[in-house]
Length: 171
Ligand code: SF4
Ligand code: SF4
Ligand code: SF4
Image 1 (cartoon, helix red, strand yellow):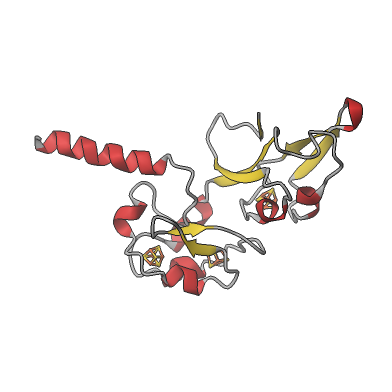
Image 2 (cartoon, protein in one colour):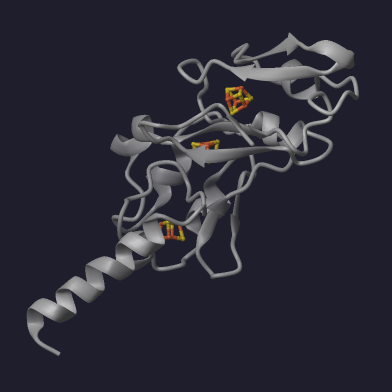
């Protein structure tokens, strides 16, 4: 394999990893997180909110289970490599997304748990016929803190990497 071909293969692999839905800790470098991270676990220990765990691949993942990320930056400050950088905290690309097919409210069951747990008032509901209500998200106000993902009783809310054509409710 030529040097150029092997570099293309390397960049392709990095891009593939970047396109995954794995949410790395705030301040993570993209692409190439797994090339920079030494799997030391310091960010897991540093997080006062316990929203970082070691994932199945051995690398840290952002996984709120009790409360939201406060974006305090302790994880990034603890990182001994370039995998996390506090300067990148403001570039957090993840925003809430509601999967309509699973959402109780969309399916006619009264539920506003995600709305009640969002301090940013991102989530509202539009009443529909038949007792249904469709969630509507103000993504400009969403911080990607993850509180709504934890609170949803049917795991209908996830964090999605924001893109230009992102829609607020996935079908
Ligand atoms: S920014 Fe703070 S609260 Fe958020 S994951 Fe990092 S250490 Fe935890
Ligand atoms: S502190 Fe940095 S190098 Fe260590 S596991 Fe976390 S991201 Fe990886
Ligand atoms: S991620 Fe945080 S700010 Fe965004 S909708 Fe969920 S609770 Fe609200």
